[in-house]
Length: 332
Ligand SMILES: NC(=O)c1ccc[n+]([C@@H]2O[C@H](COP(=O)([O-])OP(=O)(O)OC[C@H]3O[C@@H](n4cnc5c(N)ncnc54)[C@H](OP(=O)(O)O)[C@@H]3O)[C@@H](O)[C@H]2O)c1
Image (cartoon, rainbow, N blue to C red):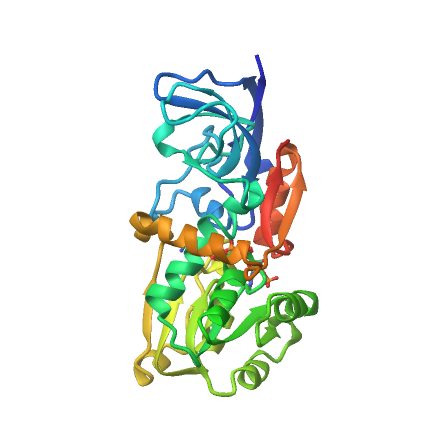
């Protein structure tokens, strides 16, 4: 029988996550019950939302309890199936969490066509982050051709797709990212019109120059001072998609937004989003994103740590911005 390894939550972090917040547990691989499918996980996705699940604060989804397997999405291969829709060898994405094997209710699995794109892409630009970019930009941002779309964390899993979709839809795309290397990648490889390094120390001046006609859409991934600065550049009747606030996830006190007045003066529409608000429309996004990837029009980059043992370090790196592209753990 195959051996499983699973990371469980050992304690709730206060402030930054540390390796001590996790415990690695060995056990035999779980046997599938009727309706379940045993999957060998090949890739584990690490995502900023995991910080919120390591907390007892009220959120849009229940958090992980102490001793439970860390929540997370994986991509892998079916080993044994007790569900009529799956057979051994099928490639799937699963909600089985931080472990090598998962026995999952077949209704919660998604079969993917790994002949059209690498399997790991279905956790990134063709998975949850890609769909987040697609629905947030299309439905809340509603950009018109010629408008300026500004996006933070622009080199990352969500932000990189936002800017490329904006370009594909005829807009001017401006990114914000940390460091020259990430900004160069966003412009030269992803094709954004400009990218501002928020660590360079002149954020307002540099953003004003990059968005010479102001911003019509701001796709917010980080919050804090970057949000306050973006608020100073928003145009009349512009839209802000509040997708994520990663700069606050490890803070003990929330950041107090100072430029709130801009929302009133400019009649800005500000709307929060959670990707599963569009659950019934996932096939539409999946198809649109797959077509762009297959046509070479959606570029994508991954940041990979090797081996399940290194999953906690991978999450810590992601939360500190040390990833460069979609953060993954290669499990096999
Ligand atoms: N609402 C939803 O349904 C939904 C779904 C998916 C993701 N999200 C949110 O979208 C955001 C991006 O997620 P992702 O998976 O695409 O992650 P990602 O961009 O691949 O990685 C996170 C990036 O955030 C940036 N960052 C970290 N700390 C920061 C700070 N203090 N100030 C400014 N930037 C910081 C870093 O980039 P730099 O080096 O450029 O700073 C880091 O690389 C997150 O806030 C996440 O929670 C929301």
